[in-house]
Length: 407
Ligand SMILES: *Cc1c(COP(=O)(O)O)cnc(C)c1O
Figure (cartoon, rainbow, N blue to C red):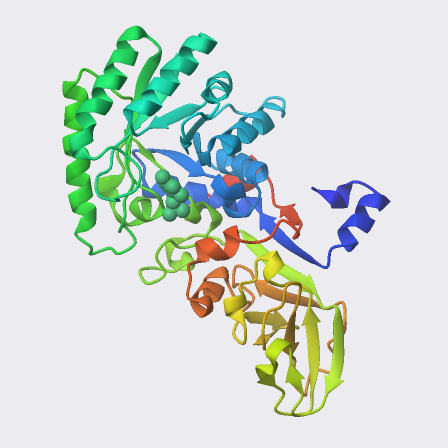
């Protein structure tokens, strides 16, 4: 991965890729500190699912821990196992709690217990499978009961909670399960005035009371993701679970942009132009000839396409910066490349020069949020869809970097 350090062969390998995503680990540590300051009474679980939202699972996880996260969260069991093994492989590394919450019946939960993971359970069948894995491994499982307070997705609805509590209570009495957490997820926290958030907090309070009445005393109650952490202090409880904000992107661009929140976008996506050439006015561009040059001009070929995660919906619109100037994708996004009309004044731009698709915006370059806007999506999708073909290169490092930047 950190190919640049590993000698000439690695340099060749690096140069064999025309594009790369630079990930600023200092920014990730800084963002976690911003989130800790926003939720001073709660611990932080950095959510690193989907390969750290496209930024790379292990480097991102380590940077988040350096910034003060004490928990990590991932959706899938396979991600959690990779995460635990990767962190454990580094001598002296911290050993955070890791929660994983999305699995289907028959998942190898014994592996979760052997890897010392925390598991979510939304239904009695899940408790039964966890109980079985606990008996098979001789380990007590740490379980977070998930309640549906209004998201209408995971979790037990109020009318199903009694059965979940009965199953969990029986397993706790048998010593196979420890109910360490109760949790839920907010549906509308990015809309600051939406009354659904207060309704979910109230429903969560009722569920917590029923858990306690059942004789279960969880250590951590958690409800907030990034938007809850940043905009709704009443959702913080004992633990917050930010994802997108860890990567320096706003969960709610209509409420506040990253800079207003003190967040630093961690990813910068660049490619080196694979070709530049003059073209006369009226030259049709890319598949379907949906665009045409309007003047005698220069074209640039950017070696990133939809196979790399550049949305095809960015055709004719996706912003880029070349030599300090702003352009946009001309014509259709192809599988491996896009065309940019560099304009008549750009004869000095050469093959090999850098096109910046997005960065933190500090040098006037577009941001992932800009791409999201022109594509009619959210920044989450822009960064998580970045293809495996694009190498990630890490900058800024560890704990000291992060701590030097107390907000
Ligand atoms: C993805 C996810 C998060 C993080 O959400 P962000 O909006 O990225 O902060 C938190 N909790 C759960 C259950 C999730 O699935």
